[in-house]
Structure formats: C-alpha cells, structure tokens
Image (cartoon, rainbow, N blue to C red; front, side, top):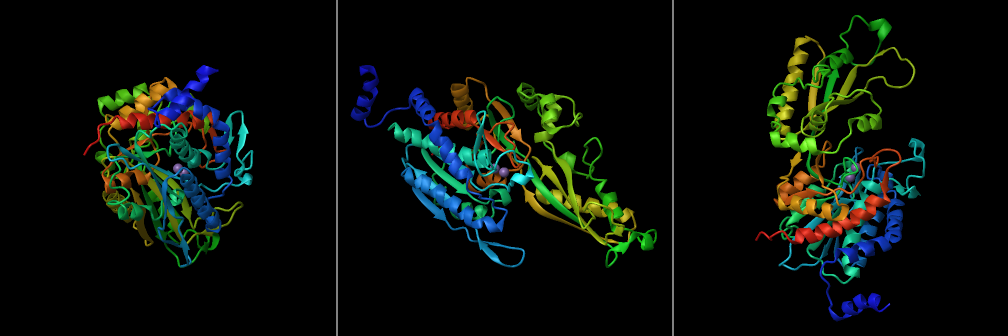
Amino acid sequence: MTLFLLPSILLVISAVHAFQFEELAHYVDSHQEEYVEALRDWVAVESDSSDVLKRPELHRMMEMTAQKLRSMGGNVQLVDIGVQELPDGQTLALPKVVTGQFGSDPNKNTVCVYGHVDVQPAKIEDGWATEPYNLTDINGNLYGRGASDNKAPVLAWMHAVEAYQALNMELPVNVKFVVEGMEETGSNGLDAMILAQRDTFFSDVDFIIISDCGWLSRRPALTYGTRGNCYFFAEVEGPKQDLHSGVYGGTVIEPMTDLIGILDTLISPSGKILVPGIREAVAPLSDEEWRMYQDIEFDINDYKSKIGVNQLMYTNKVDLLAHRWRYPTVTIHGIEGAFSAPGSKTVIPAKVIAKFSIRQVPDMEPAVVKKQVTDYLHSVFAKRKSPNTLKVTMIIGAKPWLADTKHALYEAGRTAIKKVFDMEADLIREGGTIPIARTFQDVTGKSIIMLPIGGFDDGLHSQNEKMSRYNYIEGTKLFITYLNEVAQIKKSV
Ligand code: MN
Ligand code: MN
C-alpha cells in the first residue's frame, strides 16, 4: 500500500514530472473506455463535407473539436475561412478551422498537428454491416464512418496531450493543432488560411505532423511521400443533339468513338504511359530506394485477395510498391454524357466528356503535365481528321510531396515506434494525394512528417470503415512518446 502511495506524494512535492513512459502508458490503458466513448461521440456527428445539407452537422463538429481543446485548457480559435460557391451561384459558409495551442516556451520545439474531422458520405444501404454513424465494437474493431479517417487519430493526439496534463508531467514540446472540416472535398479555404497565418500562428512552428493515412501491414509505418494528382476533362463535341443510331449511324463521325480512340492512346496495356515527356520527367529509382523497398513488409497475395484480383501489373514486391508510390499512372474514371443507365438505349451521344487523372510524382510539374497531355491529345485527335471538336482542361493540379527520411523527425519516429511497439518502422509512401502536405511545405518552409496510426485494412472511404482499439490506444502511446522524442531534436534558431 505504502509503495503505491509514494508516487502521488511525489507528485505533490515536485509540481512537474519528467517524461515517464510507463506511467503515461498505464494512464492511457486505464482510460481507453473514455477514449472509445469520445470517438463514439465524434463518429455520431454526420460531418460529411460533400453534402451541403449536412453543413449544420459539420459546423457542430468544428464546435465540438474546439470545445474539446478548450476543456484541455488550450488557447483555441475558430478561424473563419469564408464561404463556398455552389454550382447554382449560392454561397454557403465554410466550416471554421480550429486552431489550438498548448504551451509557448521559446526554449522548446513547437510541433503543429494537422488533422480533419469531416468525413466521406456513408449510408447503411451502401452495404455497411452496422450503422455508419453509430460506433460499433466488433472483436476489438471500432466500426464507423470517419473512425480511421481521421477522427480517431485527431482524438489520439488530444488524448496524448491530456495524458501529460493529467499526470502533471510537463509537455516536452509546445503543441499546436490545426483541424479543418473540408479535407474530403479538397480543403477549400485552408491554403488561404495557412498563407494568412504564416507569420502569426505558424511563425514559431518548427515541425508539422500529419496523421491522416495508414500503415501498410501490421508493422507501424512512417510515411515520407505522397503522389500528386493532375485531373483532366477531355470533351468531344459533334452533332447539335443526341441522334438515333439506326437512323444516323454510319453517316456521322461519332464523338464517343473519337473519345475512346484518344483515351486509348494514354496508357499501354502493360501500364506504360504513352504521353511523350512524362516518363522522362520521373526521378530515377536509386539503389538505396530499391533496398528500402526490399525491407518493407508487404505480402503480394494478401494485397491481391484484399482487392479481389488474381493478377497484378507486376509480380515482384519492389516493382509493385514502386508503381504504387513513386511512378505516375493514368486512370480513366468515367465519361459524362455517355449512356450508362441499365438496359439498352440506341443513342449516338452528341457530346461526351472523359474524366481521367494522372497521379504524378517528383520531378513532374503539373503545369508541364497539363501542356504535355493537352498537346498530345490534340495531336492524336488531329490524326483522326474528325470534324468534331476536342477541348482538354486540367481541373486539379495537386503536387506530390516527398520528405527526407534522414531528417531528425524521422529518426524520432523510428525511435518512438521501437519504444512503443518493439518493432522497426516501415518507411513507406502513399499512392494517394494529400495536397495540404505540400502546401505546408511550400508556405511555411517547415519540415513535415506523416505519422500514421490507422491500420492497413481500415477501409477508408469504403463500407465498414473501422479503427482497431489496438491502433487507437497504442497509437495514443506512440504520439505521447513521439512528442518526447521530438523534444530531443536540437532547436534550429
Ligand atoms: Mn483523411
Ligand atoms: Mn479521406
């Protein structure tokens, strides 16, 4: 009994404890039900940023986020980022961005944690096994929309700070939060907010941490790169209206045939991009990178069965990972104006618009890609000698992001993962695009790390999205430890 009383007596005597991992980890374990309840409250808010009818819920979600940080004693702001223009010309208030600050000791490093609390749409009819907005625990997995993307990671960061506070341990670094509510629809308004606060909120930030992605396997990971995205519309227009294919077929040069013809010249069946100049712009794969990919834990058969295919573009791990992360690819997403309803309709569509994107990588430049693709499609189209018109536009030009894995931020990540999980970290990239990473880098000039705690099979954006208790709770311990490791990085003045 006496032994157990000792720590609390010490707590009273010395106002501030130094970092003690065991104590913090124990605190997290004993509060895990509270953490799950907090996630349940957050998942219950249908903060779908893509649905304008859900906007009141999104505003409520931002208010709850601010309230959580206020309850922890942070300096909290709800930053107005203006309005969103709707297609019908109306405007709608954007959800405010929540910023929070814990500590302002100039002798400590300052980290800024970025996250989002908006979610993708979800309905039980989409094929969910449980109500998407009612967090449901099945065998240690917490099912709910937004559980992994990105509500649990944001809460885990808050709980990490709270644990230090509860045990009266000094935060080893100053911690800032930036939490937005428009990530799933392109972070509308956030770029301008970051730019506007570059010399204020962000001026004393040393490092930016993003936990908005997942591991590749059961091994914890650090993410050091994401691909960019150049998204195109290619529109072919012919007759002034849709035509009967029996009456007119064989006499008109059909827009759809032209469109399919030019789309087919973008990429070969073996995955080679055929647009001149694109492959040449890609940074070559170094020997060191090749070796890093060799070390990554990745099971090709698991991957195949997860996506339900029996053959992939590549048969070995390194090629597969490299083409998932560090080479560009073309995807054709759809054709607007094409007949796509069930049943048959004998129509010649008069105007069709293809939607395709190129996931782009260092050292490609969106502006250059735009010209390469536009020039190429026009030259291919010209060869068809078609009377129809072609219009190519690029509607998104999000840049890729790549960090230096030798940076102290990554060293700190490796050490923290080793400490919490007793495993070596996987150093991975993300095939998708997180444009805000590049914005943070370009605007603030600060170093960024992506420190994911989501599982490899969390089903982001999909039916039955989940976060496992294990990842949520151990992830909280990882964040706690990471803050202590980042404190050891020499402050660059
Ligand atoms: Mn996300
Ligand atoms: Mn997402």
